[in-house]
Length: 206
Image (cartoon, rainbow, N blue to C red; front, side, top):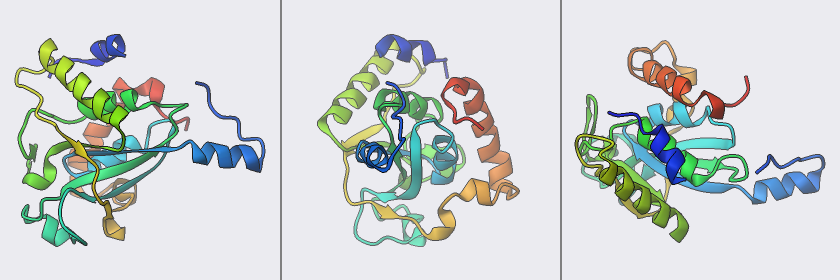
């Protein structure tokens, strides 16, 4: 995959100062949602949690029927994608910047697959929450394909949000709670480290 950071810069504020309860409430009122599917939600969560301006990341399911369980979603027959719902402050990090991260931290050219994770639940997907998010997602996807950023076309599914189902509690904050687990150390950690090098200016202060 070719580097696409410069392209995003070509395509394409201040932190709200919460000195009192009123300002804090205003800041919370300004938060927006983005919902992305980019393979296993453990990986996606571990990456977006690190971004400055992201308030919280919740792993879950979207795109299928009612009240799915992880076991059911893993069959690939429920219509759901594993997604992360990201609550963010657009005065610190905007939707275009989230898209930049989204498209760089997974392979959006493979159908229903990320690495060894195979199935419709792992599809590359953007569930937009507004017409602006839809427009930006479709526009940038088109430009990425026109630019030849990847050897194969971007096939990311862009569709309106549907009901979000929060995944079971043991899936939340998974990498931070299970960093020594083999999948975390062999798959998530290398991906997270690569992301941190590419987006070091956008990370939360430690």
